[in-house]
Length: 110
Image (cartoon, rainbow, N blue to C red):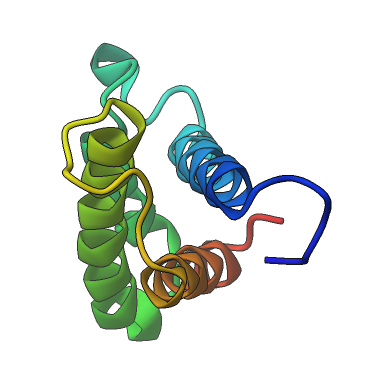
C-alpha cells in the first residue's frame, strides 16, 4: 500500500474493500446465462469460473477459487467487524491480493 496522508488503518480498510469489490466483479464476469438462479451467490459463481478456463488450467483455477472464496469470507468478517483486529496484517492482505490477481489473470478479467 502506497504511503499517503491517510492513517494506515484507513488505507488497509480501503484496500480490503477494493479487494472485495474485485472478487465480486470476478463473480459477475460470467455470462448472465450461466447461473440465473444464483444471483448474489458469489461463492457459487466463483466455482463456475473454473468451467471457463482452459482444461489444462482447471486444477489451478479450482485451487485459486477455493482461496478466493476463503478470502471473500474473511473480507466480510473484517468489514463487518466480526474479527478482533480491525484490519488484516499487511502481509496477509498482500497475499490475498496476489491470489485474486492470479485468478483474474487465469480467467482473463482485467
